[in-house]
Structure formats: C-alpha cells, structure tokens
Amino acid sequence: MENGKALVFDIKRFAVHDGSGIRTTVFFKGCGMRCRWCQNPEGLEPKQNAVWLENTCLHCGTCAANALPGQMEFTDGSPRLNHAYAGSFDNLIHACPSGAIRYDSRYYTVEELMAEIRKDEVFFRHGGGVTFSGGEPLLHGPVLVECLKRCREEGIRTAIESALYADTETLKQVIPLVDEFFADFKCADPERHREITGVSNERIKEHLKLVLHDASSVTIRTPLIPDYTASIENISAIAAFLAEQKPDVHYELLNYNELAPAKYPMTGKVYEPGQKKRFSEAEMENFQNAARNQGLINVS
Ligand code: SF4
Image (cartoon, rainbow, N blue to C red; front, side, top):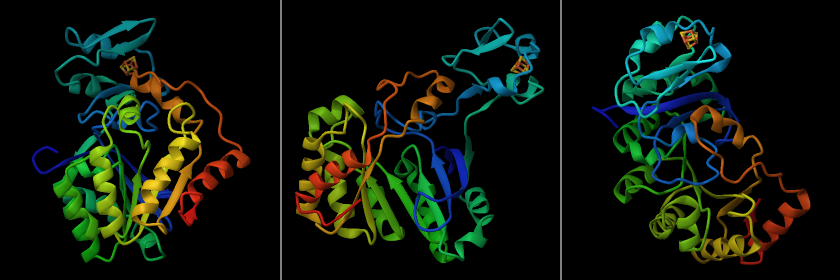
C-alpha cells in the first residue's frame, strides 16, 4: 500500500471458480507466506517488478542500447533483466517497441479500482460479483475496506480469498462487509506449517475461529499438494479443528493443480514440489471421508 493506493497484479474477468456466478477477480500483490507450491508466484513480492515476455520480444536489442549500468545483460539476442537492480526500469519499458518489457503490476486508488470493477456490472445483476484475491488481500486493508464499503453501497456482491496471515484488526473490519468468505487452512501441525509455508499457523487458527463464528458464508479450503498437505493425518487434524468450531461449515478439498509449475520460469523462482499428478476420484473420496469422519457434514 503506497499513498492510498494498492498494488494489483491482475484483474481477471469472467471467472467462475472464485465465488457465486460470474466474477471479476482482483489480485492484490504481496503475501507474508511463502507456500512452496504457491499457484500465484507472481503475486508474492509486495513491489513492482519488471518482467520480460519472451513471446512478444523482437530480439532487436533496443533495450540493451538504452540500458543503464547494472540493469540487464543482453546475450544470444535476448535481455536478462537484473531483478536485484534497485532503480526504476522505466527507461527499458519506454524503449522496448513491442511491450516485451513491462511491470508485472500497477498501483490503483480506490476510485480506479472501482472503475475497473464497474465495467462488469452487467454480470453483477445476474448473481455474480467481485472477488478480492492475491497475494493476500488483507495486506491492503485501507483500499480493500473502502472498496468493500463502496461495493455494498452499490449493491455489488463481494467475496474474498485469504490465507488469513494478516492483521487481526483488518480482518475484523472486513468480515461484516463480505458476502462470501473463502479461507485456506493448509496444515494443522504448527511446525510442519512453518516448514512448508514459512510461518506458524497459530495466528491463522485464531483468525479461522473469527471467520467461522462471525462471517456469514464461509468455505474453508485445503489445497492437496503431494508430500506437503495431502495426507489423511493432516486432513483429519484440520477437519477435527473445524468440526470443533462449526461442524456444518463448507470444507473444500482442492485437487492438485498440474498447471501451477508453468508460471515459475517467468518469475525466476523454482517450483519446489516438482511436477506432480492430480489425485484420482477414489483418492479424493478418501480425503473427503477422512474429513467427514471427524464430524464435518458439508465436505466436497
Ligand atoms: S527492446 Fe523489447 S523487443 Fe527489443 S530485444 Fe529488448 S525486450 Fe526484445
């Protein structure tokens, strides 16, 4: 958040999996967790990064001719941006004739974000709405809260997707303003949670209790990542925690996303789990039954 603006790395229109009906999904940039399988690695850093898009590059060398010392190298007809360079990349972005060098995100004021959201209001009249995702949307409290208030005033239904590793006061402000709350609970064991996400789950569990008790429509999700979250032991422990709080909460197990590793080369990051396979229907049923065995009655 910078001068009343929030950093957004994507606005996806016509989404159908981020809440009821057809959604416009706003992806805020920045997250305090580092899940080793993150599906949106381009949304982790809370700052603008310059990126090079190989598909649109003309290999013309104009960028190299305009580069400042330390900004990039140019080898075999392609630029290699130096992501450790502390200054601006504006000169390269302006010089590139094909738009192959650009920033991965931009800052929005509340007014600018609401203008983007209103472009899709025809869908909002038919059961759709706007979903705030990320990154971690709760890290952008002031802009998020103001957008939620404006949406409510204008009759636009809202949803939020959060991993709940954020400030408690922001969460308390957001809960009554959101129509549908999607929250992750990835791993029940605090030490294992820290190993695979970079943070302990103690604060997340406290926030889950708040959401389960105070939010109006709640779905808790666990992404099933082989060797990380996908074990009967982990799912059973998560389900037992949820059943103790709210046995009729919707608990959703998300099958492994085989497309997740594809984004990593663009960001210069390594996808640690390696390429894995999706779980079969029978395997998914086993996980779901493990959750039901702990007393949850609404598992999918
Ligand atoms: S100026 Fe743009 S199109 Fe030309 S080589 Fe550099 S990145 Fe590619």
